[in-house]
Length: 466
Image (cartoon, rainbow, N blue to C red; front, side):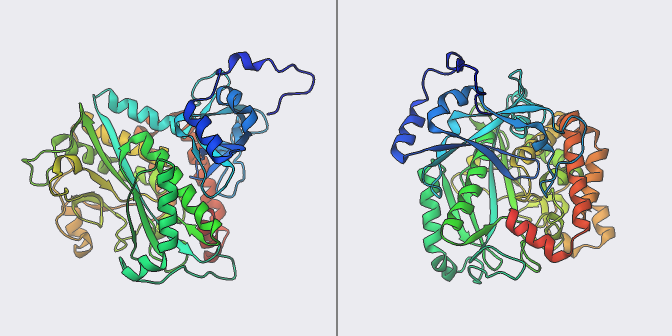
């Protein structure tokens, strides 16, 4: 909110004397005029407000006002009627200065990622970034540091899809060298833009589906990994729009398309050593690693409401889609919810990790990663046994054979996952009463609203919003 007329501006005494040097340098070098204060809402949408360069110093300290009800908006931007989330009530968008970047697709603009802080200066219970911080603290209590990386896929269109149709950017084969050539200008421009913002790009390639691409950034501590994903998606979409194209991270952007996942890679470290690694185990995994998997599988049905949190998610989360639709684990098993990737030659200890496949980009990355950590840590604390690894494609087994192995399919519809989340005492506890109430009401509202739309309207909504 701007300073009211007639009230003297005496706030500067409470503000930092000067901006951090890296921010000053970047603003000067890039002629920055507006700085966006961004957060990610419960629908995984990145939102924000912007402050002019002139008033950045004071607003870094005080934050920018935000109506509480913005965290109660559903997928159609309608405020869900929840007590305490109407016309009255406010929190603050307070940025983390170490997240400052300039926006390569928006000359003159920069941005920082924010925590949602209450008026007393405390972390608000409905702040997604705070939820991940709480999960990281839970790991710290065990002397463990979570390391993670997101692996998002996206579909490139020549222009924004409309009700009248769409045009794919390319229709090449998986890993096709021609696909590299067709997307070269865009992929090189995107890679340069990300690296210039300090984002560590590692892998890029054309993916399995028509128009589908994947760019993966290097693993980092859990909070930085989630922050990096937010920047990656924002810059990817921004660079596409600046070039007249459209990048969609929707799970299924159009009928019949191959699904876009956002797999999460995880490991836990202690005193600089990968606690998931055991060179004497047949899969290279430690007891801590197995117990972590045990926690993920024990909580998997309810987890889906947090990692695959949209109606569109369940068009992707199906058997034979390599989306992790089965609650099981196995070495390089791409139909399992949890895959143990083969370690890299010469880097076995450093590269040992587990991949959670049942996640997509409609999820808020802070909530999804936080939930995965809480579930896995519960497995460690209670020494949960994940059972035997599944060494074959679960689609080749009958229902009876799957049951004998303790394998079940994950929820087939979003409302089923929400029911499991609602019934989970564990997630009710770790989410906290306010976040649990908000999240369930928002998502149930989404389900109701999409029931009134036809299939084509659903695809268009997700392909343009994500």
